[in-house]
Image 1 (tube, one colour):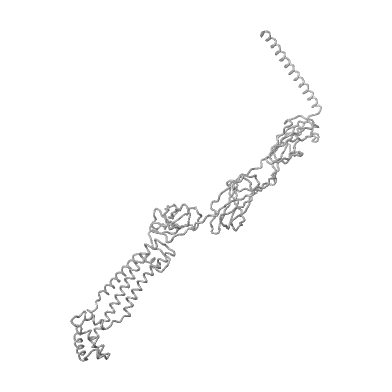
Image 2 (cartoon, rainbow, N blue to C red):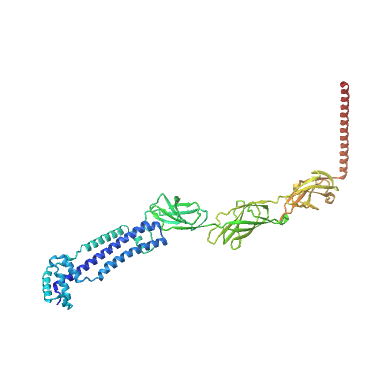
Amino acid sequence: MTMSDAIRTRIDLLRSRARGAEIARSSGRLAIILVVGLLGWLACDYWLVTTIFGLGWWDIAARLALTGTLLWLLGREAWGGLAAEIRRHRADDELAMRLEESHPELGGRLISTVQLMRDLEAGETRKIGSPGLVMALAEDAQARAESVDHRLAWDLRPAKSAMSWAAALLAIGIGLAAWRGDIAAAFLRRLAFMSAHYPTATRILSVTIPELVGRGDPVPVEVEVDPSSEVPEWATASVRGADGRSSTIRLERVEVAGKAVFRGSLKQAVEEVAMRPSAGDHRWESWVAVRVLPRPAVKSLSLRLVFPEYLKQAPQVSETGDLQVPTGTVVEVTAALSRTVTEAVLQSAIGLGDPTQVAMEIGGQAQSATGRFTVTEDGWWSISLKSADGLDSGNPPRWTIAAIPDRAPSVVATFPAREKDATRFARWPIRFVARDDHGVAGVRLRWQIIPPGADPDSVTAVAEGIEVPNIRTSGSESTQGEVGFDLGAVNPEVGSRVIWWLEVRDARTPQANVSPSQRGTFNIMDPAEMRERMIRDKAELVDSIKTIRDRQRDTRDGVDGARKAVQPGQK
């Protein structure tokens, strides 16, 4: 015996209806979770993730968390709803009970028939008692089943509601994507873990922030905005320190032809920071890390001052960068450095001119540098450094150079007078005083003969001279000397003039300083004429002496007479 066709048909129809309704409801719920989850993913990413983290590892981690949550919700619904319904096979008893609930007039006959007929088919007659009664019950249930509407046993409204909501949300999602396709495109790229940012009214084209600065230096920030987008009056940059504290600096717009550029700076960097500029509604996609390291610098100096050899001074050592040394001094520099360096350059300049640069030798585990330069004139010198990380010494200190020049020596002739008459055989002593700041190296007596009636400027003959012996000093002491000038050895003719002078020189090398004295002149006369002049001069001198004596005697007599005239009156 088997269940009648009417009962089987009603149960199978209800099973099919239930299966379809539940699959539709689960599919709708799955679609709702998908759409709502994607919208939630977009909202969290748009307003939180990109705002807080920007691009980078934290951004990827946040997107992974959002995607993981969405997949967990979808998987939970798919496995517990849709997949479970597909795997599920509803029993006849459950379906019969559904039909009984929707048709009270069956009075339990349908569920009883299903259960008894199953036992009868299994041959378990002891459970059912009389098979005849079972058959009679089955016939009655079959008759009543003819009028049963299986559609009343399973409500489709939950499935329709889920599908309606899913369709509405899908329509909303598609509409939003069509309305803001740029946001949708960026959303899909970020959902696929690709680099993208959401469109904004203001578009930042580029951000320029140094990755490495020296400790205590300012950190410049430059932001370029697309001029075809909405350009704000100013921009900002968020600053986040290593300790978590944050601040904001303002970036002012600067005039750059055809560009919208904003610039500003963090006044002083003392620790590593991260910066993230914003302009209008566009916040730069990532934090820009700025490393802060001390710039390489000179810790201490050791200068060995090697003076010019002619000065006869021992080398000296100084730890002061400012120099006041004689011209020609060689300065040997040894600098201890604050950091290891890859490059050290010694710079020296004359006045305000461009410096000359000489590479220094690096040693001491790259923490010392040596070099040298020669002092020629007043100026400055400095040491420029560069470390392996690319950080240089910035604006290193400049030390002054005061070059003490080797002044020219001086010589003064003290005897004879500047112009003297002399015979061609006379011998005159030339006395002088010579001086130099670092010592006199020698003195020469120079002369030039001017023929009778000749113009001194027209004489082209080279001046002659002799060296004054034993004239050499050290230091700045002056020296006196004397040299005999034998006119007979020169053999000038009568009526000519012998112009003479002294030349003093110092010990400077490679070229000595030379200075002349004032010039003197010997007018060469005939000896006879010279004797007559001397006799005349002698007579004039005697007459002058006699006149002076006569005046002295007259004066004395007048004083004595006046004294005698006064004395009687006093009595």
